[in-house]
Amino acid sequence: MRAWAVTGTAPAAEGPLRLVERPVPAPTDREIRVRVTACGVCRTDLHLAEGDLTPRRPGVVPGHEVVGVVDAVGPDARRLAVGDRVGVAWLRATCGRCRFCRRGDENLCLTPSFTGWDHDGGFAEWATVDERYAYRLPDAYDDLHVAPLLCAGIIGYRALRRAAVPPGGRLGIYGFGASAHITAQLAIADGVTVHVLTRAPEAQRLALELGAASAGGAAERPPEPLDSAILFAPAGELVPVALAALDRGGTLAIAGIHLSDVPVLDYQRHLFQERQVRSVTANTRADGVELLERAVAAGVRTTVTPYPFERADEALTDLAADRVTGAAVITLDGTGSQ
Image (cartoon, rainbow, N blue to C red; front, side):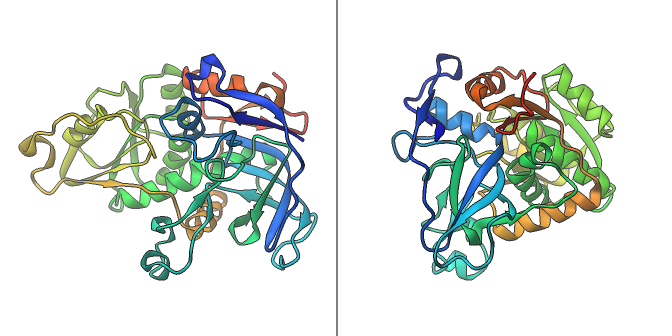
């Protein structure tokens, strides 16, 4: 099979991905094999290719917003069957035994593994996963448009919960890519006033089209104090900016797996009056199930830019250069030509 592998970390424009030939994987135990039809391109894939995240094994295949059809099952698989349409997300496996798993916080598992980091992901024609970590996908979305929900949507949903927006509250969103444009719609559907702060004019326009109350530059002050904020941009210099925009008792949730260094904070300006900062770490499977249900109920529309499989490296380069509005999605069913 064809697959895109991280053969050496480098800036995306220098080609850290290489198109390689690999054996078609065979599912074992409770695994299923998925014939991939689409795979979203996440900023985590970019961090992996560029070396912000250290690859956990050489030649790993990235991609953890995987959509496809089950075409083979392992000997112990019972939950899913050949022909089922499924999604494969970032969280690939947890131990189920540590103190965090036992209390329901499997996103904090001490020995987790992740799709496209520990194990090969969806930048390939086939992928395998334990069936317990695969998602049944809603019929409301086609393969192209459901792909971003599998990480951008799930992480955005968890970040929204971590941000603790009060009913009818005011939410600031810093950065407006794949995850943020989904999260904004979920918040607006809940009656939250959303202010978007992002540097890209195209992203600002999309934010307003989706119902944001305002859209301005990333370092600008929102038009009113914020009850909560979510930082999606991997820019540590925006942490004090977002904290300074919070009202008393406000919460900032930081959604990314990677963040550049945070400047020194001024206690009185940034944290006093019970302002707080929360990180977001991976997700639970329950987060994924809830997000897919909420997205359908809220009528969330994913904005996607499709790329044919043969141009997966270009999708990564465009993401690095902020040339993607919404989410980039690699397709293997002929829908990715531009």
